[in-house]
Image 1: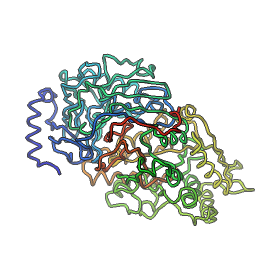
Image 2: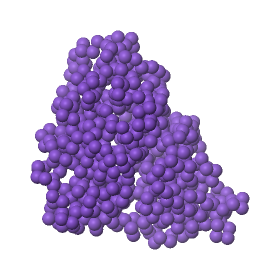
Image 3: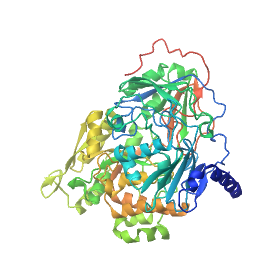
Image 4: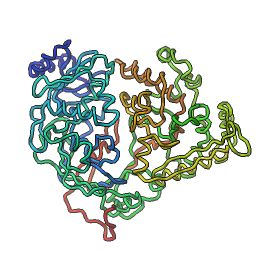
Length: 622
């Protein structure tokens, strides 16, 4: 329940007296508070003691063993090559100014920053740091560290950080523990929250060279864990910092319960599964439906030492799919993209290969109020989209469009006829068994990184061959795959556009026209659309929930009309398995999976006995 308004005002007044630096900002009076929500008010009162989904009495101690697929090349989760970074660093080692509650769409509570101040227009934001905060070497965190982190990430961070931080007019220290950002003209109501999620790096121990080049240097953070051991590409060990400054904060209540967290990396998922069965790994999130149905009938599961759960996934479902690189000339016509998407036979695939466990991806905000699917556009949406009349298909505007359904036989001729008709509108014709235009056959490459992607791509390639399209599948190693993705050197590859309950700045990096040619951005499809840019701007400027939902649905309609990807599928539930020596609280957050980050933040040990792997236990995977 939300506290009465009077209680908020009294608490804010007390904090204002405590934070004289904020009053010297010279801006219109704002509101000082220990939390901020993207829309509306934070759900928890200022004096909350624990997050609703955390167990205040969780047992502390023990070691958590996790398996991680692939490898890692650096310990910097914030650089351009963060895709190669080790797991478990953002949060457990590096802390941000504020932290999320996953029970709310997008609400932040104080962490390194004790309070946040902003005005109604969100034209500025001021953070007052907790004077108790310090790095793991004992050096206090000050405004200098915040400004250093901002400048470094703005210059050398990931593209989405550089884009967001570039909207800030200026940053300055009001005193050793107060930092003020001028956001005038940004017209982005999410920006104060994005800045609140900025990691705080140590100015006394970090340099630009270390950030960009010293990939395996042991990081220095302010979080509850320190990096205790590194075997490059194979193992990472985190150990609890006995002098962690924030252990008594309400936002940390019931979190980070293990004394040690060990990540063992494996290049083969079957090897990781065998390690889990042998008791060398404590927790596993399953993604293979065949294994989920048939693979968990082993002794430890039968005798109750291993638990399996199918947990509901709250919040919007995003979209995964074969992304068209519209920078390529052959993919610039959305009619051809729709034609190729029409050939994907989800119904046969789900029934014959996935035991009917999956649901088709249908919207970029699927299964939520933000989705346009099945909803006719409201008057407010139509007004928002009016300047871009050609950007939204009529059936998508009317809410009558849905991905095509096959007859499930695997040889649906009607799908092929529809696909050829759409391709014909784009100037492609079937001649001598090949789809051609101006005498040139349609052929392209599908880039994949593992055997699972390869199998799916080969299946799709076989379907496309039925309409005369040659889609070659190319499997490459992780390093080459990431390099080509960052340079946009591909025709088609699998993309994942995860959705949150509060979409915002990330949409600019995924779909904004300015990011289409920005190396390493998430704009896989190379989308460039004035309509998309306008809808993202409306999303970021929305003040109330109704205005926000209107902008999100309008954006969804424009993206769906662009046919930027061949929609794939998702699991309606999260499949997890774990040894009963660990456990999660009974209450689960509404907007996140139980595995929030990489260390199972709310989980804890259930007993103290030393682990005893099965006699036939295989060595840890590498």
